[in-house]
Structure formats: structure tokens, C-alpha cells
Image (cartoon, rainbow, N blue to C red; front, side, top):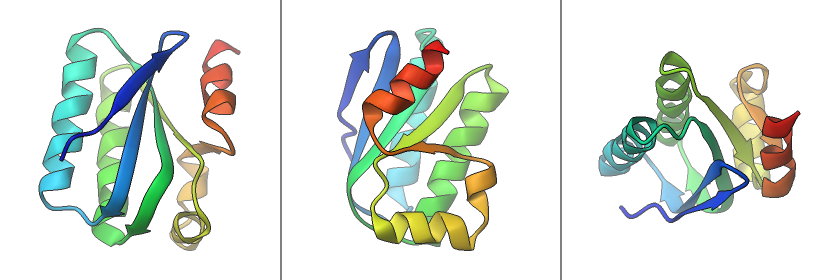
Length: 113
């Protein structure tokens, strides 16, 4: 799984796409986050606007990413969640853990404040 990334104002934006169901995708995301940490990139926004489906394993990927960033002095924010992902986050009460934003720009701006 290739995870497209861009940088905006010192924040790395990872654009997850398609069905996020765990498996090899979890390893790819973990590898990408560790690569960013090794480069000193500790502010990350996950753009979920192109995610079509997410199950509990996919949610586990997000939790793992959050933990990886936090334990290495970084921070992970979510942006542009579709209705299905929003419901999954709410049902599991993870909105108290994840900072989520309507737009990537809003998430990036929050790092500056």
C-alpha cells in the first residue's frame, strides 16, 4: 500500500485511500510513521476523505498510528472523515482520543496554535 503524502507548513499530510481493513496496510502505515519520526517529522494529519470503508482493524490502524506518534513525542490528527468513519469513531468513543477536523487546513492550522 502506497500512502501519498504532502507537506504543508511543517505538517505531513497522509492521504489514506480506499478500504482500510488492516492487514498489510497496517504495516505500511506503521512503516511510514516511523520513517517520518526518523526524519524528525512529528506533526501528522491523516486525510480520510478518500476512505471508502473502514472496519475495526482499520480503526486499530489509526489507534496504532496515534500511539506511535504520541510515544515518540509527536501528534496525529484526523481530517475530512466521511459519515461512516465518523460513526465508527463515535460508536467506539474514540472522539475523546482523536482530534478530528472538517478540513485538512483546519487540522494543519491547529498545530500552529
